Length: 74
Image 1 (cartoon, rainbow, N blue to C red):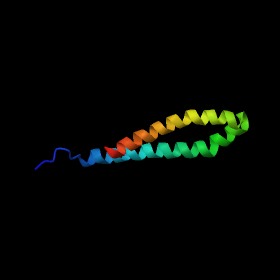
Image 2: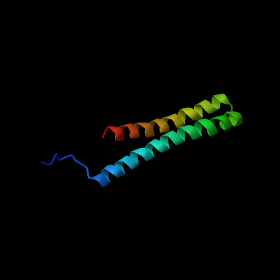
Image 3: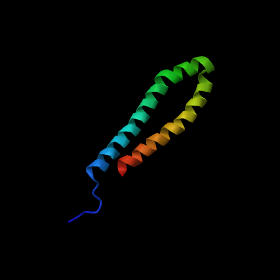
Image 4: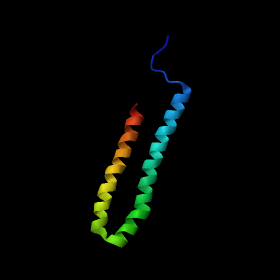
C-alpha cells in the first residue's frame, strides 16, 4: 500500500543537501561576521555605530535561520 507522502531517495537526498547548505550559510555567516566584521567595524566606526550595523545584519541572519528551521520541520 502506498503511503502517499513517501519521497524518492533522490528528492530526499537533494532536500538534505539543501538543508545542510542553509545551515552552512547560517553558521558561516555568523562565524565570519563575529570574527571579522565586528572587530574591524568597531575599530573603524566605533562600537555604537557597529551596534546599529549588527542590528540590521541580525535581521537577515535570523531570516536564514527561520528558513532553515522551517525546512527541518517539513
